[in-house]
Picture 1 (tube, rainbow, N blue to C red):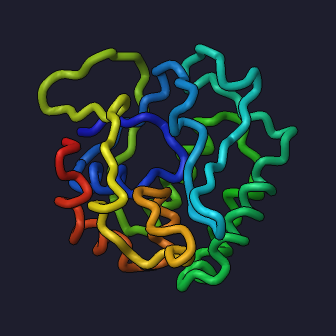
Picture 2: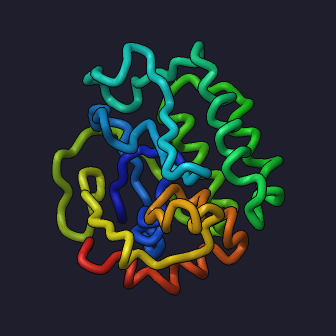
Picture 3: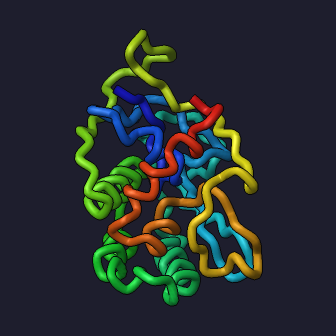
Length: 209
């Protein structure tokens, strides 16, 4: 079992870490942490890395449990995110294949951050043909016992030089950008995304587990 933070469109390393897990426990009870991936994800655009942030009611400084964090939909963030994604990836090899289904995540309104984050993980799991059992926590545990891998506070060490390369649309302009949202890899590798992750897992996770 792996205990994970509730994050939207998880990065490539997250999928490498969770690949062999029978169960992924998503923590709804931990406090929201600002400046983390709980409400943001990174993609690559024409001018480099782009961080897309989901705005929250009461801002990012609140100390509420993740299950109580409410999205601020007045900011029309879904429209902005979708315009940014389509602008960045419309010429990627597989973007058109995933576009119709992915767009639904940017047109349906979500109230709670955990609700949206869960929907993104569920959608990606379906596209990647990953059959994890996903559960959510009902009570907070600061630490877990043996046999449970806790990645809620894990800091992944990344290197632009050692992270395995794959085709990125703007690499010739910006250089290779490691460990973006798995969306970036999906639009390049399509149905072979998990094959790529599994083939490169030992390198991705080297020194991080």
